[in-house]
Length: 148
Ligand SMILES: *[C@@H]1O[C@H](CO)[C@@H](O)[C@H](O)[C@H]1NC(C)=O
Ligand SMILES: *[C@@H]1O[C@H](CO)[C@@H](O)[C@H](O)[C@H]1NC(C)=O
Image 1 (cartoon, rainbow, N blue to C red):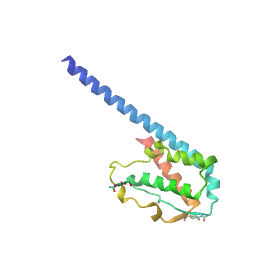
Image 2 (cartoon, rainbow, N blue to C red):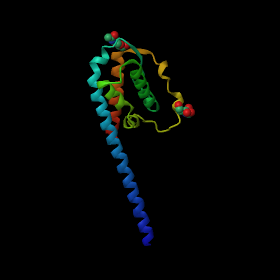
Image 3 (cartoon, rainbow, N blue to C red):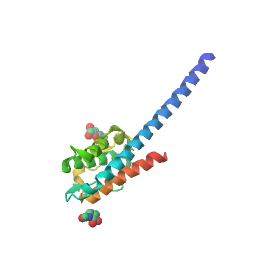
Image 4 (cartoon, rainbow, N blue to C red):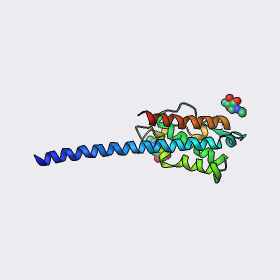
């Protein structure tokens, strides 16, 4: 009898602990994404001055393609802007951070990446539009992490 009670108690504690871990991770993800948003804002002017056209994922991205869209934004930034120094370097590092990537991973089934569009198949947009869409992707992720 005692053993059963102990086991139930152990299971109960385990489930509490894992809930706590998930919540902390969400909080950390949200904080990281808020940092990304600030860093984005800090490069806004210099980024938008660019006359480059960039492959840009659309505005409303399905859950399982959000991470793939993030990677597309990362890749474009790396190719088209100097991400080796200054504020752009900070932004780029934050965008590639595992917390950021986990924060954008809304896919509940991990095996459906084949349906996401390739980065280079997205129509090219100007830097302003590129910036705005990246910003709204991050904002959307923050609000989803805040809600649940
Ligand atoms: C998902 O992407 C990975 C790496 O790009 C690939 O190895 C895997 O086969 C893909 N999964 C599906 C279901 O297409
Ligand atoms: C950038 O693209 C958007 C959407 O295609 C357009 O509305 C905007 O006028 C463009 N801005 C510049 C500076 O070309």
